[in-house]
Length: 162
Length: 391
Image 1: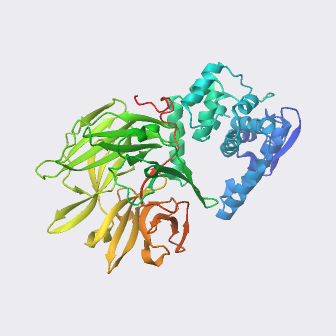
Image 2: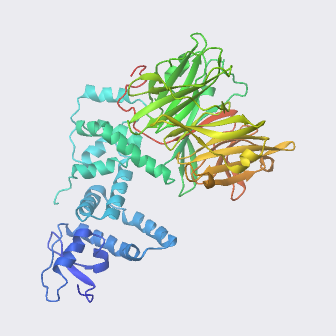
Image 3: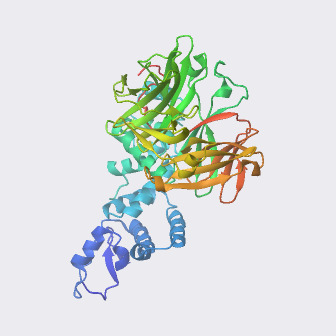
């Protein structure tokens, strides 16, 4: 492994090129393997493709670059606090448009921290949603009859279904 | 990954992080989600996740029964003021503390006396109601958030005038995934041996426990606390002419007794009363000692930071109640960040921060007695019928 390499180039599924620093790429196991396998010989001209679209990959790389220093060296409490605030800002995004893609990317790239953060963000957004909003964002068809739905309401009188 | 259909394993991961009320609502999204949310494995994984967060100081809360009338007697017919039930939410990050009112099952109002809450475990609460007309005990295990409950059959041993005290408790047997109610009975005559019966929700029956109960006197009016897989009672015994206090434990899975030593100070002082105290999140065992001093008394609160290790008793709060405005009368519970929820002489409920020697009122002004238990949200009983009397 050559120590002179500080950043590598990767391709998104849309074919766009992105740069990611080696320390940031280490947050993902598959990316790390990719680095070791492919890109550390100086004459390597092969650019690895990551099966994540450009829009999502930008966000994933942004997350990695922000979290890499802390993941590699540990951090003080004030840093952790600052990072928490950054995460909250970072996660302010549209559910269907981008959050679901981040979830899938974090899952595919084995990024535990981002996956956990994205799952929690999705849960926080969903908890206030109505049943029909949930059906819409998850592309779910209502397969209950109206009698069954009425029965469900009767079973859980303490809970709002709207 | 061109579309945005989430794979089922990711959907499951997200659902595990949703609060109970949202999950109940989402049982009506579609059949698949309904079966997923009401599945035993899901219920248990969701609960375990909540319990881990509660033990880390998040998501743990408390259950309260407040009695809002000064001269309430147990013989009185049940009325709203005896059943003021609340859970708390304590967001550590913004230091916000709030009470949420819980609805009552209608069954309670058909009783001829008040039911008393005696135990909490995994989001379930257990109430005990004694009927003088049939001379029997009625026990209810209830999920207040889902408003679903189970009525427990009558214990084998009938209550009679020979029974001096009975200690109830609710616990969870993690090996058999079973909720158990234990009843410990002591008799007026010390010639009768103490007696213990256990009810299993899986087998739906009572069993007498054959091992003998260690010789102790239960402290009156002190419901057991379920921590670390065991119920705990504050007890005392006479030894060499003096009273020795300790904690009796009953392991709900192994069905064995044990004894825990109290912090040193509480044993040395003879003019002390000791009560077990509930800690938010249910992670720790805590005691409150009331040490008489002159015409007043001092309060000392200890927490056992490492279960079973006597040296780990740590004093987290001691105060002279008269130094606080309104005069602190009773310690109800401890929050996970070490604040005391206390009742003042005038019935106000306050949150006391021992590090700042400060107190703030939280919600209630006229509470004359209270039961507190540690509480977490859970989906246990979601498959039961609402307000159903039978299993």
